Length: 276
Image 1: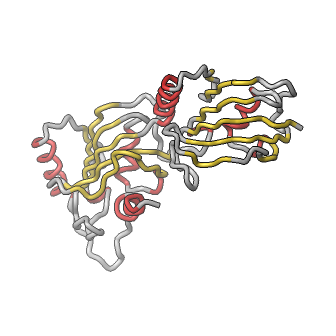
Image 2 (image 1 turned 180 degrees about the vertical axis):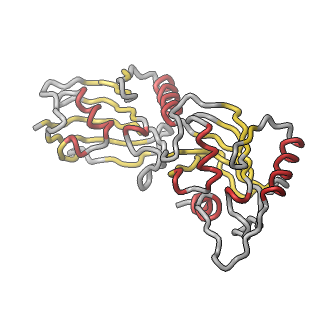
Image 3 (image 1 turned 120 degrees about the vertical axis):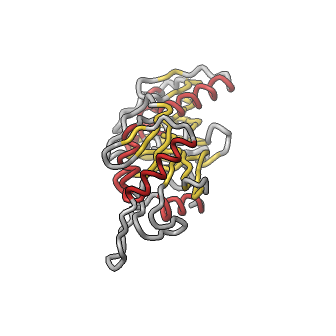
């Protein structure tokens, strides 16, 4: 697991409980002045909520609506009002469950849909309170620049680019799966409950291989596989060969698995050796 990922959860996106023996200081008025000055200096079109949170919606996003129980994936930059950057991840992104986060993020991210972007200006009582917390001084206003990742849209764009770059004759299913039939095969179509033997090679769209069987393949019941395989292999007959281009929603989702990062599109070359 990468250091920034660990630090992200340890420092920024875990809930913080004040020590019972510490003295609580009310920073609300001071924080409000600080936020208003930051808004003025940066000419922001910010809206305020009753809680003291301020937010800026640059793009609403066209993906899934965010709720208090959502798993979300985002790229972010977290900083103090003086510009000091605490942590940022503007490339790969990170996935979290919203319920486990500080109050300001729980409230603020619900103003966006997946694919949205903007800024959250979070006073201390909605963040880390009146105690020092790691690099965050007591009573600090935290500024988050956020982009909520819409993996449905991003994965589709990635697959379409791969299809075009490799001149593939791919078909898209209603689920978002793309498949290429090089050889249909002349045996039986598998059912979800069929036992199948499949030889395969799995790689990312950049060509990096993450898994591969030998020529004899592996044998198991079809419904033991990821959803993209369960659906995709049923387009082939026994003896069929082709490719499956699988979005993350039909593979390992936003959180990934072992050597597969969250949100990854997977490409599989498959040979359906047998169907029983």
